[in-house]
Length: 139
Image (tube, rainbow, N blue to C red; front, side):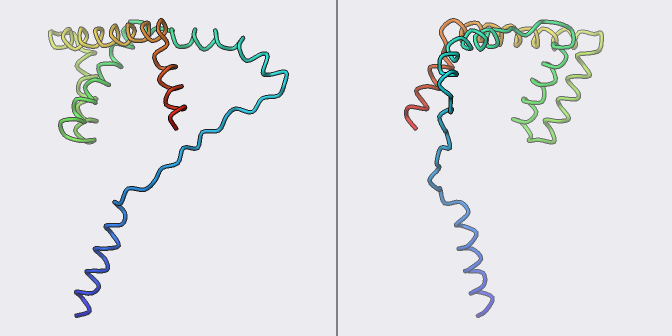
């Protein structure tokens, strides 16, 4: 009798951890002094320059990207342990001099080029800034 009561209480208590809770956004508007409000528009071009910075296609970045792509693929297929092992293996293959390293290098270069293209599109149309603003307005 006591064991079944304990099991019931334990199951009800553990289920409460999975009940969705109301999330609150802790977004505060930036506080500015009266002199800083005038200087704020001048800081905008600096942010645009940072956003449009492209990733250089060098040997180090290609090897690093190969590890990232391999780790992401391994994580999707088998979880964190397989992801770590796959990342290390693909990074090792990218440093070798054979046909497999050419394939991995080509995929990595293509991924970097796609990322750079998307950065350019975002800098041109300010997609992330607009999405961030609309999300902040919604919250």
